[in-house]
Image 1 (cartoon, one colour):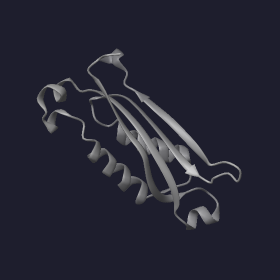
Image 2: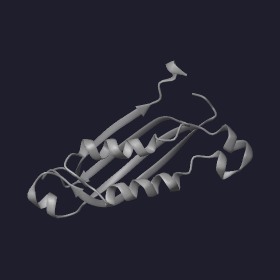
Image 3: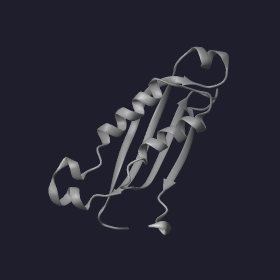
Image 4: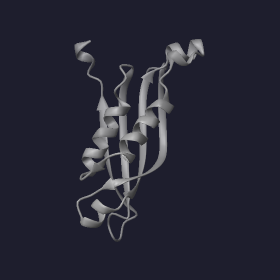
Length: 125
């Protein structure tokens, strides 16, 4: 692993949104828990201590919150994909993973989760 790679982890971001296809899911917001992992080269930030040289996890988190809280989703796959798109939109991001839990989606399970991953294709660079 490249020693200049930094890993940002956003852990257990608890939000509420409309998610699902059943009538009660369409009419009532539900809890979701979001975990995101973002890998990027942090060499400039490590050497400068300047925010302009770092990936701003606060900005990323605010975008995720706005997306989730201001929209409706039928599928957990679609919601996860939209959050993943936010985590990997910056050109510095090499790898990103997002896992979203939907607590109490199944009667005898703590939650159901969906995980999607992004990896930059370096073959074209």
